Image (cartoon, rainbow, N blue to C red; front, side):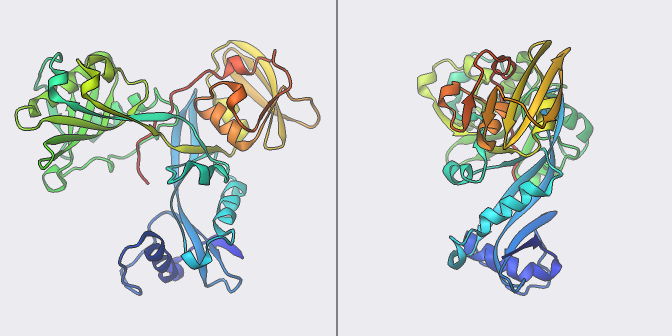
Length: 370
C-alpha cells in the first residue's frame, strides 16, 4: 500500500471514491472537477493508481490556553466499500500523525468508537436547544442590530475571535468567509449586536422555527441584547432552535420553563494530541508553580511550571508520575477529563503529583464545519 498526497492527476479516482462512499451522483471525467481541500491524503494499491481510501486535511489554528495550536482539521474520510477492512484508513491516520507540522488534530466523528481506535477522543459536550419564544418572554426586545452584508467584516471577526478565545480549541478566523455577504440570496443572515454579539440565522417557515447556527457574545449583557433582537421574530415564528451551544451556556438561565424546551446533549467533536510538548507548554496552568513528569505515547516529559507558564523537556530516563495513551492525553489535556479512574489508557504512579491540579476541566467548543 502506498500513502501519498493526491495531485490533479488523481481527481478521477477521488471522485469515484467520494461518489461510492457518500452516495451522491458524480460525472466522472468532468474537466471542471477539482480536489475539494488544500490537502487530500490517499492510500493507493501498490500500482500507485488505484485509490483505496482518502481524506481531506485543512490547516487551522485553535485557541488553547495561553496561545494557539496548529490543527489538522480532518474531513471527508472515505473508503471504497470493496476495499474496506484492509487497513487503508488506519494507514492514512498513521501518516498524518507521523508527518509532523501539527500540534493537534480535530474531526467530527460519525462514530466516536471508530475514531477512538485511531487515537481520537471526545473532548467535550455541546448542546442544541429548541425553545418556544414564549419561554424567552423575560428578555426585553430590542432592535439595536446591524445586518452583515459584506461591509464591516473586521468588526464581525473581532467579536468572533474575542469570544472564541474564551473557549478551548475554538478555531481562529482570519477571514469572513464563514458569514454570508449576500444574505438575500443565501437566506443566511448574520445580525450584529453593538460590538459584543452576533447570531447567524435561517428561518424554516414550514416548522415555524428560527434556526440559529452561530451564537457568540462577550458578556451577559450582549447575550441578552442579541436574544432581545431574536424575539422580534416571535410574531411570525413559534420557536427558536440553537444548533450548537457550549454545555455551560448561560442562555439556559433565562428560559422561563426548561421543561417546555427540547435540550439535546451532543459530542462537541473528537481530537488527538500530536505534539504533546507544544500542548503542555501552551496550556494555561491554574497554579503559579509546580512540576510533574508524564509519559505520553511512549515519550517521558518533565514539566516545570513557574509564573503560570511551563517548559516541557523530553527525559531520557525518569519514573513518570502518570502514563497516558494518546486517547487519555487528548481527553485530559484538551477537554473534560472526568474522574481519573474512569479514563482508559491512564495509569497513575504518583497520586500526590502536581499533575491533576494543573489540568482542571476546560470548556472545549468549536463550530466550524469542514
